[in-house]
Length: 466
Image (cartoon, rainbow, N blue to C red; front, side, top):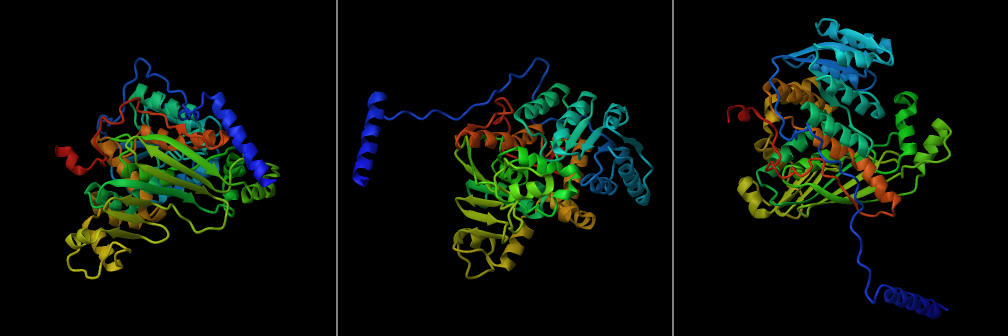
């Protein structure tokens, strides 16, 4: 029986080849989505510099989960004036006003209700609109703010559809305003230090990087008003929250500063826990998002990125953060460590013995290495960041850097192309999954400018005198 079955398979295969002219069919290229042409009046904002601001006048929209912490952090930053606060609910605005009072700041203009955010954006005494609302509101608010001449900082993900990603890019190019996604994980102390090591060539040529968002949210869904985040996952398949893992990976690879993501392939598991949680919280009978989603990305220069997303199953928190280079390796989760070739270790750490490239360097050696390669930003602000906090201090560094660059007329560490590319992963992985894990091309949101800047660099004090 088995022989007849395999014989039939062989016969069918030969018939298929005959139908194709005797040759195996050539696989088609990746699925390609629409890239709109740059409209008249738009100019690239890669490396955008705007007029320096002596004081950054800011208005906050969204004072639920993330907003109050941002208000608090901004009160610790020099050169800031908090002009307006807005939330759907007036009591949240009042609580944010209490933060200003406690910190010795004057009360800000207060807005609430469905349309309050528009009034805030129309004010002529605001330079920066800082958006901490649910994901679906990010783009309408950001577009409106830029239309009214404001720079924008918006929480992750910046957008949830490809159309929205292009809208952000087009509006930033049209208005020549900054649009920064508030991806805090690129400012983690380990990530910044490792990035500095990589930029100094310590790992040789970077070949592969990994990132993830693995965070069991089972006990946290109720923190999102109306279960909006669980509802989004119930309706959307793919890696819907990729930026925490992807952002640091892209900076290591100089994405759209010498390289760019070319195409991706995604796979996912069935939804077991996600469906169960949605049944309990929302009465749902279906769930689009798989419990675990995997994504592989290839860059134009041949490097690879591996992403994972899982917010449903019992697992320790992890953003993975791994770097594989020709001369070394870096890892953050579950154990922070570095591996380097023996000759490279001896030149970097000559006083240490019994080091090899087969295992992590010792904790003592790691501390010495990280101190030697501490990122200049960390050197500048570490003590204050650890004092003020926000995910251990990285939130404060993020806000500090945003204000610093605006006050000095420097390009931001993250621009609108980063916001669009990192956010687009959700829609692109969904497209791959819907077509049987087919490869999908990653749009070039820079429209051909991805190699105009040679290498990723944070705007630093030194650039002011160059």
